[in-house]
Length: 87
Image 1 (cartoon, rainbow, N blue to C red):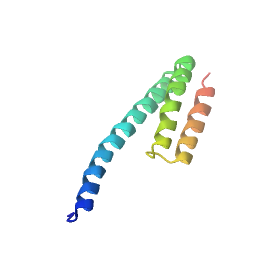
Image 2 (cartoon, one colour):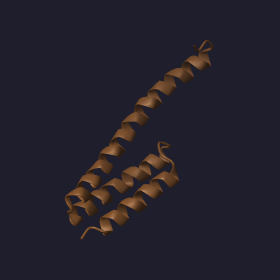
Image 3 (cartoon, helix red, strand yellow):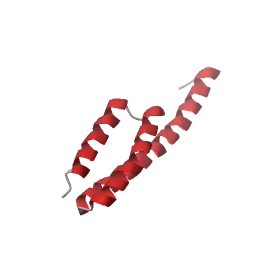
Image 4 (tube, helix red, strand yellow):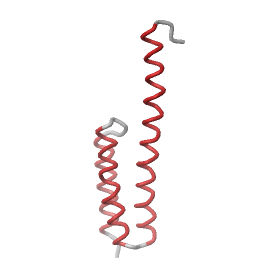
């Protein structure tokens, strides 16, 4: 347990940041799920627009430190290739 004042403050900050990061991660997952559902339905236009909506959200996750840059690059690459492959 935190004893010094700075350790107590750090603990408070960590819990606050944890809530913010959890919300951001959840939001990103929602956007990714929308892309996955559009791909599964086979609607290329819907999938492409869902991917366009998800990309800035993913990049925001990188800039805020929630996700690693290479993770997001890999996800976007794989999703875009799957959207492109829809007949």
